[in-house]
Image (cartoon, rainbow, N blue to C red; front, side, top):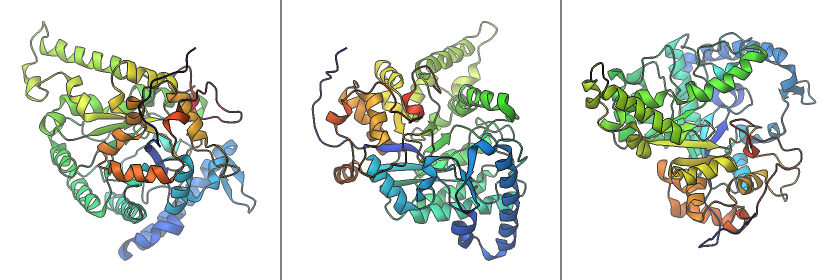
Length: 445
């Protein structure tokens, strides 16, 4: 097997992770952002969440261990980093991994919720639920509390930390106001929930002010896999079905509704990002969505002439410019397919930091080679330079409005990989590493 691939330049590669997570503590970090009138409700919620957490940890004891003080914590190497909630520790970890900038979702595997999030049944996996708010007013306050905390964290270095705003999605008018506030506060995108069974479908006219505001403020609607299903995924069978359905159904559900509903026709600069939906689905998805469109436009039982008023061209034509993929822990076959089939310009590599299944692994020594570098070599060793640079960071920089020249300077002073380093092939995961980045067979293995 030849390992020679032509290259045209040297120097560090700008890496932007399109998928990272953060989890500020209800007790230690976000309470001071709570308005005085809601403090009693906030403290009640903290007590409710403590009780919820105790049930969860008894339900899944294999996921937790005593930290030596009697406190149960996640049984994961990455729990050792303070980057779950502290921006300077995140920056240290990013420097080690060679990541110039990051896109930040909530949900850091330290089990901290956005304040006033509906918790539901503690015997059902929290990750895969997105329940209607029990108290819409309090839930909206909780999202703003989190956004205010996150904006302060990102303000430490705005080019390196791209915060995604939580929105009260059940209230379009309030969501528009939160988007406007978030953009002014320095957040650079919206943590856009997957389609919910209890919300209007995304082709409905009610969403138009929200699409308009997000486009006007250049706030990409950034969805992450999970938290969209209406099924009970508890038990050993449910947990497996969840991983399958979150890719095949819920993770992508916004795409046809928004596209066919005309959101991109009316707002050409509106961007939708679908994150952590692995696989090589892009060509087949576009083929079948276009096929469905043509079949209904020209149906033998009667042309669907009204559709063209919303979606004037093939869906794939919109999606080439308006849909991007947060390619979390991208593997070699996915990188090859993106180049071969011409959609690499829509792919944005992600580390999934600090999730244990991602590429960041808390090191035994800060002098060791980061697993992230090894994972990138596994994925991209034979990828041509221009697609490699696009997928590793340059596309994400454009989508989120980052200054590429500043990022190049940052890459030059951190542990960013070079083209030469990325050209060194890796064919297997290192011993003891269990990251999805080293997949060979399919979505998850």
